[in-house]
Image 1 (cartoon, rainbow, N blue to C red):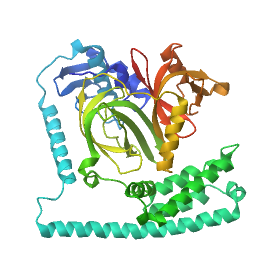
Image 2: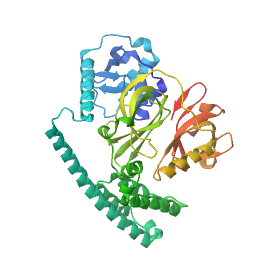
Image 3: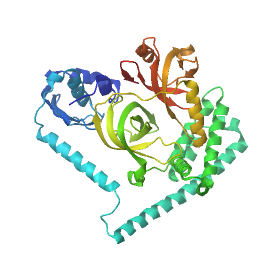
Image 4: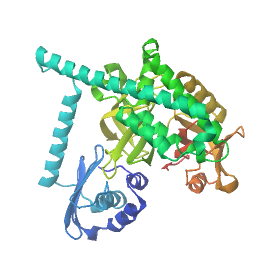
Length: 442
């Protein structure tokens, strides 16, 4: 049966317009049929046609026969809102055939995915050798392209240094885009994104030269690390490869990389990067005490993979990518569960800075550090800029892109909060907060 709160359901919505439309559909009169069981919700919504709507509660996942490209659509959100706010209207029943067919397809897809991720133990030795040889060939070819791309990038950086930062500030966007495009061709997409993000620094106002120099220095350090890759510890090798753009597949992760636990979804953030939509989903393991990042991408209007809403507990396996500071992980076999609790928090802002400094010493290209801060107060500064003040009167700046400072302040009602967010070394982006009685996602 449904255990999601209204706030958790709203967190699934692709935009505010979908939430507004879904609230209008969360009325029994809009539905020709409704039902639920321990696995799913279903219904037939009256619109310009009779749309078949269903939600697999195990992940959750959504399906609707409407033509909307939004995911989940307003009909699936409306069904969830009605089941949460008016549970008596969605009675237990026998699922229709169309729902059973969809669930069966999902199970078959999960089995195929598991089979692809498992070793080729069902193949004879000759077939296994052919597959291994083909994989080695692809790896060697990519390695050759990456090596050539990084050599060109180093020449480009040396030219930039000779010309000076003042010259860089006068250059158009194509100055950066051209080199970034060549890195994409060299199969180094991580470095291409890094360069494109750097392009905005020269026009970012006071202190731009120091910020750009720091980024360029970090990039050059990565190139020097790659040059000496074989002499570095394996976790640092993995960090360098990941920053360049190598990705890890489920089959690449060793057995000891997987951790099975009850995981609390404590925050999500979505944003657009060029033509990609990116989603950060952070989880905390109740037994292992680890924080993990499930990172997903979708191209333009493609749907994101379904994932639990903030504040939701799931039982699942997480496979952590090799790293000196393991954060990113793959999520496998999630099942929604009922549980309570919240992660332990750092004492204050000074403790956060110490933790970030220690992590940066291990992994110099660390972009964000997840942080749970205890007993902090939202404080509004000049120009509507927000801070988090701890009990020692330390103030941590909130990222200017965070637009819900007033909501964060109202949640605490003038009392300290426990706040979870992403710290980038200079600013915190709040993603969730706890009071004594409730959790709220941002």
